[in-house]
Amino acid sequence: MHNYDAAVIGGGIIGSSTAYFLKTLAPSLSVCVVEPDPTYEFCSTVRASGGARRLFSCPENIEMSNFSIGFIKRFPQHMAVDGREAPVDWVEGGYLFIVPPNAMPMLEAHALRQREHGCEIDLLTPAQLKQRFPSMHVGDLGGGAHSPRDGWCDPHGLLQGTRRKAASLGTIYIQDRVTSLSKSGTSVIEATLASGAGVRAAAFVNAAGAWAGQICDMIDMPLPVAPLRRFEHYFTAGGPIERLPYVKDTERLAFRSEGAGFSGGLVDGNEPRGFNFEVDHQYFERVVWPALAHRFPVFNAAKCHRTWSGLYEQCELDGNPIIGNWKGRFDNFYVVCGFSGHGMMHAPAAGRGIAELIVKGAFQSIDLERFGYRRVETGEPYAEEGIK
Image (cartoon, helix red, strand yellow):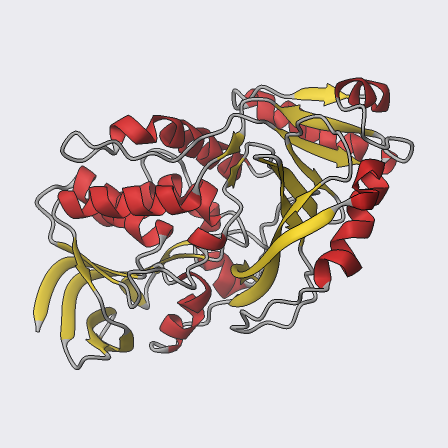
């Protein structure tokens, strides 16, 4: 049996960020992270697209992006260990949301809110879109919102750099799997591991991502988070095309420039939930290619070179993360999950938020109370508007 001040279940980018900020806010805390697979083969983080943007409607998401993007930009030097930098290959390529005419009022309202939070946003008419991105078909668009200071990074580098830094601060990484949780009164007191070992802690954090629901089931805590398979593709155009930002539309087409080609896909929200990592090699031609070719005709001759699958930890209540504890039931059990595809970009802010709750007893930097577990208990969704 091992005793810790805080035990984090799940060592992906969310769990490792939580451990890092716990050790930063309170260096004397003993912190462990239980992670079954240090290779992270099926971890959502390393299968992510790496995008980070401020184009959100909820103020909390905008503020989390403001902090996280700045953190990622400083990451190589700030997260260095023993003089060894932590490269994440940040590309300030910008984001571009494009919408039909009936969605322009909403896009304009969101841009106003984003600017109120210090974001640089350019609203573009169809003519301006065509001028900046000549290959784009704009005849059915009402316009777009361009955030030039957003971009993307290497998710694998971000995860490994965060884990290495957390370990250098004293976090203990345990290669094992939580199989059950024991409780007493209003506290979770112990996690039993697959190896037979046990972990006792004053605070437990469920950062298990797509597996978070299984962890909450161990204490009969309802959690509307389910694994949603999605595909990422690397493809090239059939002819010359300008370098593009991270393009997203209302039909969930999302892709960005990557080297000599592009990386992206189109999420099927009706995909059956479950832990399915099989790759449908016809999905690109059947679903993604028609959407690409419609928006950028040069993609009529696109070639898909590689397809891989990953899991969103989909919050079925509203698509926003659940960040907080089960107040009055298990006060020392915290969840930070359900990011629905935004986990990597918001990991620094979310990890800091949970660490503040544990160390300070309340959110200090960004008020994330509306993302708390209470909305699950009351069944009151708090969702993003427009493009997710």
